Length: 355
Image (cartoon, rainbow, N blue to C red; front, side, top):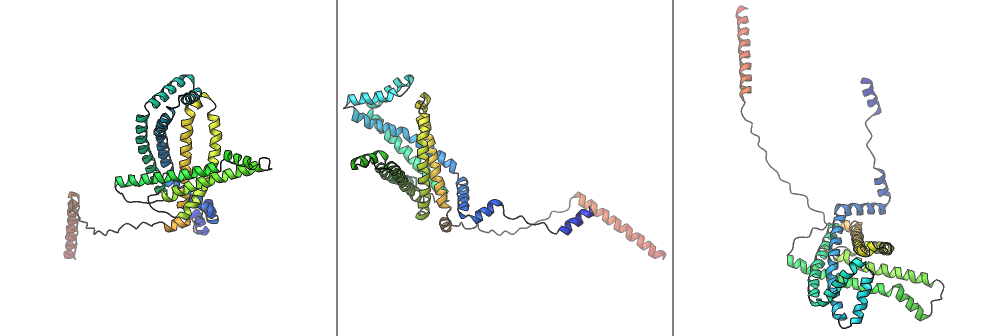
């Protein structure tokens, strides 16, 4: 044991552990440090939880929108029975025989009750749309770590309705840009200009289509990341995060097209593929938006502008400790000490007399 202690003393004090491998890499590479901060912010602010909520309200909003579409189609198609029969045959022809008759009856009922279906669809679309917007704004606010004060319920819904209309306008602009840069329109323009036989025109058209799609998505994501949180945020960081989201979204769209082609090839895919594809598409899109928001919120500019919460107030309390009296055991011990003291003094006095 002594030999072991002597060896430890000769070795000196224990060396402190240095930074880990990840900490050293983060210190040497700022981009890696930013990505780690993004992941920590996304998980810490419940990104997956809010993405699931956005997915739920997205799927919920589809049905009232379809009701409105059926109502509008009913008012348009009721004056053209031949076109109505052709659309009905196209829809039911792609479904299994067990579902074709049911869907045909639903289409006929929706067209015959087009006014009622339209009103109910508008009310349902308003409810689900406001719920979708409220959940999206809450998710973005969490990623920015904003603590907005509670406001009036009606005023909040009015703001959400304005944000929903603004996002709809931004999506319409984005859709217009996508249509202008689409491959079909590009092919027509090339045909009109007589450039179809030009070498490399196909690759150039594909590049233009991709860039147009990224630009359209970027415009929408800038609006979402910078303007939909409850409080104002820095536009510069939001623009960088939106660019990353636009590129990721464009890649995801092309992968989703291949996925839907595989899923829709069988009878089960025809029946359940669209709703499953919609859920996957909405969930991954929500995660892309929230990750891009976390990326923008954890940039150096955003962290420098972030509000540091004030420390909790210090409370000084005076502590008074009251000791209770001795119990029975203490009294008995005191009596014993007193008896021993008296006995000792008696013996000492007797020795003094004898001496």
